[in-house]
Structures are given as C-alpha cells and as structure tokens.
Image 1 (cartoon, rainbow, N blue to C red):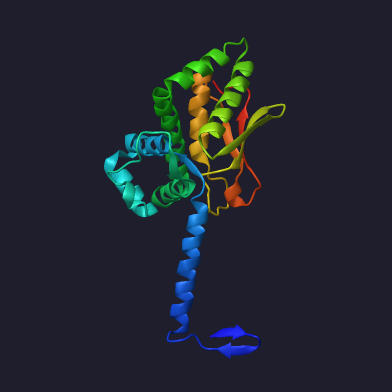
Image 2: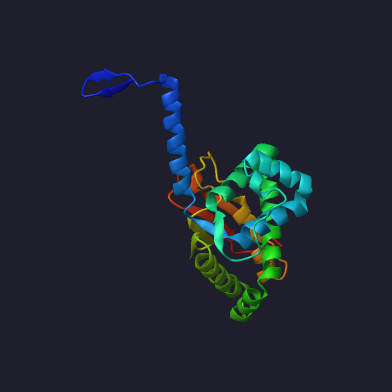
Amino acid sequence: MIVRAGLLIPYPNTRLGESMSDEKTELKTQAEQTEEKYYYPNKWGRVILTSAEDIMGAPGVRSLLNLAGLQEYIDNYPPDNMKKEFPFLHVSKLQEAMWEMYGKRGARVFATRAGEQSFKDGLAQFKSVAAAAQVAMKVGTLEAKAKIGLEFFSKFFNSVSDQKVAIGEDEKNWLWIIERCPMCWDRKAEEPVCYLAVGVLQGAFAWVADGKRFRISPVNCIGKGDEKGIIKIEKIPVE
C-alpha cells in the first residue's frame, strides 16, 4: 500500500513485496548508473587483470571475476587503450571480491602484490612517461627524488584518469592523499582497504630509490567513512 495524504492506497494489480522489490531494482539501476560516471583508462583495467593473472593464474582470475559479478571480462579483458571506460565500480568490485576469496589478511597481500605488479607492467607500457619521470628526478638526495616522483605520478593519475590525488607531507612521512578513490567506490569497510594503491606506491618507490623498500601504510579510507584516503610513506627506507 501507498500512504498518501493520510490514506492507505493499495498497489494496483500487484503484491506489496513485488512492488517494493521492483522499486529497489529500479533504484539500484539508477545508483549503478551514477556510480559508473568515473573511470580508469581501459589500459589500467587491463593491467589490473593481467597483473592478477600473473599472481593467481587464469583460473584464479576467472573465479575472481565470477565472484565480483564481472563475467563480461572473462577471456575478454579491456582493450589496450587509454579511453576512460573502465568504471571505478568495477575496480571496487574486484577488490571486494579479493577480500571474499582470500580473507582480510590474504587479500591485503594479494592486493599489494597486484599493485606492485601493476606498476611494473604499467612502467613497461608507459615508457615515455617513465623516461620523463627519470628526467624530472635527476636531483641529488633520495628525499628530493621521492618528492618529485610523487608529484609527477600524482599529476599523471589526475590527467589520465578520474581518480583525484594530492600530495602532502609531515616531518616523518610523505602523504598520498586520495580525494576520489576507485578502490573503495560504493564500498563500506571497517578499516582501510586501498592496498592496491599501497602496492603501486611500493613498486614506484622501489623504482625511484633503486630497490630500497619503504614502510607504506593506509591510515584513512573513504570506504570507512573518512573524507579522504591517506597513505603514509615513511621518509626513511626500511632497507
């Protein structure tokens, strides 16, 4: 029934449960249309999947895609171009499915490894970008190199995708600040879940610092209700 002006009006020719279900379906469809207005380039979506395949094999990726409800990518990865057509919602669904497949602890490891592999694969495919970054980072200290590298990569992210990233720092850490995040898009979590970005940053810092490792930790996450995602990178390398 519908309550209108204090009256109870029955739904015509239908049961209450069916009408409510139809309304929810319609609302969900509208929500999904809204959620898909931000995109990664197809190439980045492809790299995420090929990197995952390197780690878990083709059968593992098929299982991941089935669990994520993204069967359209099974044996049909996004095209190898820079058109912004890979929805943030799909990035988020892949990350959430990884959490379901491997549990919280395992998913962190796999997402981080996938992020590192994504950076390596991306570096191989974006040779001109890598060359430009190397030119920009021809400076003396490791700290100066890292800061210039972060600024360069944030501008690259912002220019070719709908992800929005800013850079900050405090006395002990650099800050990778995610203002619009694909990894936790339309996702609720009790703790940070953006470990794909952690892996990308680990790969980037290993490249910038000639293999040195840094302690990189997500501290804020939009998925858990924070205004922005924040990943801290300690300025002193671990090794």
